[in-house]
Image (tube, rainbow, N blue to C red; front, side):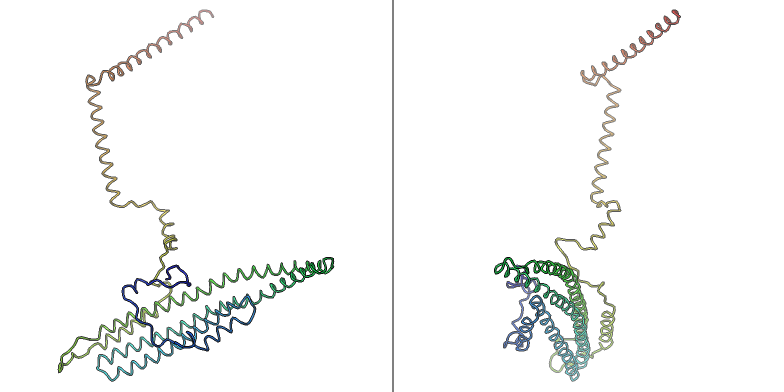
Length: 370
């Protein structure tokens, strides 16, 4: 990625580049007439010079993407020829080199087939962006009409403020603004939906293409393990090569792995620092319905604390029983508190008995009066 996360500044070296510095620039890159040659520059420049002004920049992007597809198609054809030539060259070598180069040619040929599939899927992205360009081109006339009416009204107000055409033009301007608002809203909605769909096509095709190529690279490295590269002295013969079945099985495994691959089984997943993945969010929702799981270390600590609390409670109860059985061991203030409580209970009993006696006397007096 870029140091300032922009295309306007130079790139910062990646971790892989710091570990192993990149090689020098390839000698086959074009050094004349720009990066893409005369035809490339002509197509891209002319694409942004014609058509409605609103859609010119997107027209240029669509034309550049078409050049990308042409370049990918050329690279795919060249890779296919290279695979065939690798097999032809290895045919005249020893048995192990002949077999390995033949199988490597098969894998590289499969890479070219994947390039063709990638081109077809990548073109879906380009066509979707092209549909946005067509919609922008259809919105441009409504903008031009509104601007033209606005200019006429301003001209008449300056030259003939009392003209009756001003009211007619103002009514037309209201209708033109309403049409323009509808067109702009449709453009805004369609642009967002089409942009999202277009780059979903592109990124899905990139994920499929890159992961399948990674699979092929892995099986290619497995083929290289069958090649004995240990040095021999002059006059010494190498052991006979017996990896025909193993190399054949590697190709079969590679073919089955490519056929069984789906987008859901992609190995590379993005890790975002500011937002959790959708799968993590689902796991959190499942955990909300369940009781929280406490780690084993915390459980052990809680059990030890509970055991300590129980031991302290038992010791405290034993001390209280001893104090109750031996009141002399209490402090004088505590003894006074216990005696005062007993006296309070006795006085309370006496008051209740006196009140009962008074009630009985009152009852007897009332009966005698009757």
